[in-house]
Image (cartoon, rainbow, N blue to C red):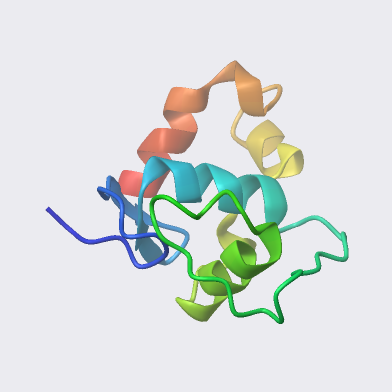
Length: 101
């Protein structure tokens, strides 16, 4: 078993350039491409682990980037259409498979 680089929970594999758990993989996919100004209430010094990962979105996303997760590896709807899928929700298994190839 691998130790995830972001939160330390049980890893499921290599996602977006880092070893992550399902929770951090989904979090990164949802938040990395947003143009939202995230702010930490504690001077960007939050500890991110299995228990505290949901407390501070800004610090968690910063930690994702610090372990070299790559937002360029997130497939958007245009990429999905190029492989014949209508939207992200059409074939979650296909996206899961892409992370393991």
